[in-house]
Amino acid sequence: MSEQGGDQDVVIDVHHLTKKFDGRAVVRDLSMQVKRGMIYGFLGPNGSGKTTTIRMLCGLLTPDEGSGTCLGFDIRTQTNQIKLQVGYMTQRFSLYQDLSVRENLEFVGRVYGLAKPAQAARAAIQRLGLTGREEQLAGELSGGWKQRLALGACTLPGPKLLLLDEPTAGVDPKARREFWNEIHALAAEGLTVLVSTHYMDEAERCHEIAYIAYGDLLVRGTVEQVIAASHLTTYNVTATDGVGINALAQELTDKPGIDMVAPFGTTLHVSGRDAAALDAAIAPYRARADLDWKRSEPSLEDVFIDLMGKAKDNFQ
Image (tube, one colour):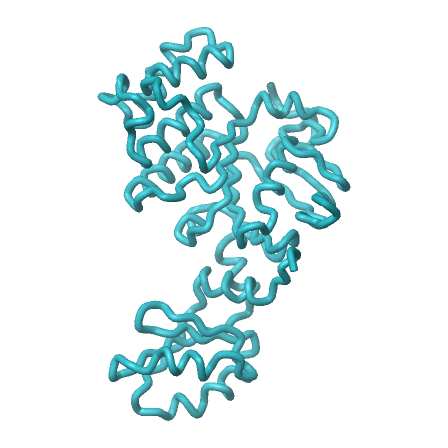
């Protein structure tokens, strides 16, 4: 089924979405577009509205205010049409633990009414590198293999939109990298992906990202655009004697002109939104012989730590 009218490259187009629970706005006045084949990452603190946003974008949750379309269908009045074309992978493994890999996939194929569920299952097993594990019980798989099986199950019916809610939590780095390689391969075939994540390296693998904090969309764009929009100036500082960094961090925190101090191993990232004020604040410390200061580009993690510091928790 093709998208109805409008720009055929725009899969999601929503305006001024707001959702409240118990009188508290979990998402406020959110507007955005997502194009076909894009991997769009949502980042933010726990409870910030990431999952609520994703569910509203694809018609799984009705907004209290606002309007829009997903896959060409109205997110308020045509939700059943949207759901038929959405694959949803949650953080928690939701397939049958006492069925084998093959049996789980064949069952999903039959549920969705595929003409040849066994053939579709075999194709998914081969594509996801599960060959040789067909008869292994799902409950006996490691976290990384369970993740592959879950991805195979939610993409088996051929959805046009894939939702991934913290999909790699608790999975080792190698399995996470292999998972993301598969996501990029699917996106290259035209699948659109919305993903919530806490991992900065995963965010950097998204085509675009949005940072949501306690209901507000604070920034969105490519990683490069988000970093540039922060207007942060950053220095890395290390102690030449290998000690004293913790004391220095405490001393620098909350000084005028310094907006963020964050330890990264034996190095401190010291950042400010006003370059002149930052330079003035750290000038006395740059004269110290026991400290080595180097100007650096702000990282995505620097930006998000800074954004979290500015965000207001709407639970409070």
